[in-house]
Image (tube, rainbow, N blue to C red; front, side, top):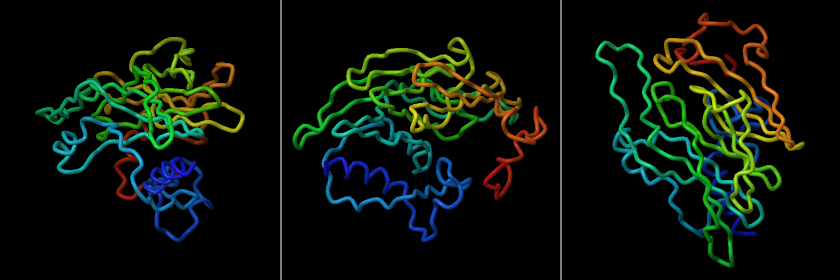
Length: 271
């Protein structure tokens, strides 16, 4: 179990902040603040030594070249259950970022789509972290001109189920022990064109899974308003969804606030 503590420590240490204020007293959402400072409610252990080294992104070196030394990728936090470890592994091909249009107009760019996001199951056996299985996903991130940096592919585990983001606003439910896909959950009734699973999948103590689905215009995603849903998956695979326009009280609809929040020099925590 010391190994697992270290794996968890590496994940939390990467996200922890040295701030003295208590990050748990205010904002209770992902990243603990609108500024994405990354504060968490627990202090991570200091890593002692490397127990295993596994490549998750074979394109990292190339990605840093195109980002002038940075790496503009949101990586999955590894998931641990007892001696089982579940982590991202990207395969496929890397495509360079799209170049801006000559006139500066909006044009959809899908340079991320040549990559493939998979989830791997590893297991500690003695002092060795051994590969068990890999499950592929057809998930695609939002158009790269929308996000700039590569979006997060973050599954969640509930009991013996591993939920994977997938294509068209859908989610795969996978047996976490065998890696066999049990069901594709489709809140829109099908694998819907131009709908994307964005942000992390999260779960509550009752075993419900929550995530975001966003629709972008396929030609000019930045010039048109989006449609976004909050989706809830119950343990029996039934789905409830609601539009964000209907649950954010007083939110402007249509194009009346398009682009303004992101353009603020210091945006507030709540748009």
